[in-house]
Length: 196
Image 1 (spheres, one colour):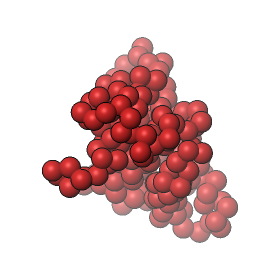
Image 2 (cartoon, helix red, strand yellow; image 1 turned 45 degrees about the vertical axis):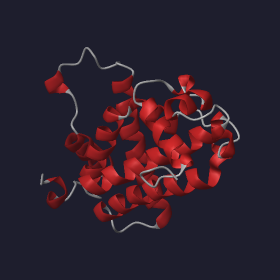
Image 3 (tube, rainbow, N blue to C red; image 1 turned 180 degrees about the vertical axis):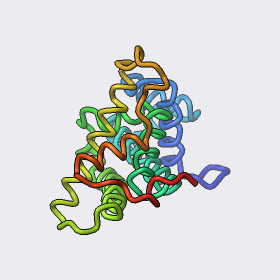
């Protein structure tokens, strides 16, 4: 345990998360994280068999961060939209890690699966609140459609594909929610679109 009560494993993961804010995942290595933590280059191997296992732990933190932001924004369709866009804009490298090629998942499957399922359950909950009269398969399909719409938008933002679009012409989380609702032939209930 360190002076703040964290285990070395937690410190390594926290450090890797912080490093991901300024570096790409390709530059992350067990050795670089160890150096930043001030421990021997072999110390991380007590907790992670390789870089992929560390990346799985980091991606798990990303899903927990996303879930926290969803809870802060509200588990509604507009809240989900705001949360996803806010998270992606604030943590672009984390999003690339979480949703990019996932060679690392097998290394930390349990932790990764639990964290990603928790975030997805919030997506289902928000979708169910807006469209309560659907069976489970339809609910999952609608939630994945919403996620796909949001992820496509943030991918365009991250890739600078929309740099030529005037700022005042850019979609908002609310307009994305309305688009999603209209695709389903609904409107988002008015309580869903009000700002706090």
